[in-house]
Image: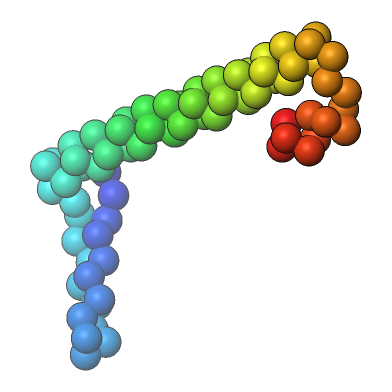
Length: 74
């Protein structure tokens, strides 16, 4: 994978160059880390939703109705 880097200076001029191998490696590492963080966030959201559904089901089994569960924010 290769890509170009464009630097824009305050005076408006631009300079474009090819990325160095180190910059390419860093970008690839950043993309891998970003994807791992995204997957972890999605897993945390799914786990929280599952726990909320479980809590709602347990409280409903104890006799709370939908209005009471909604009043509790569930």
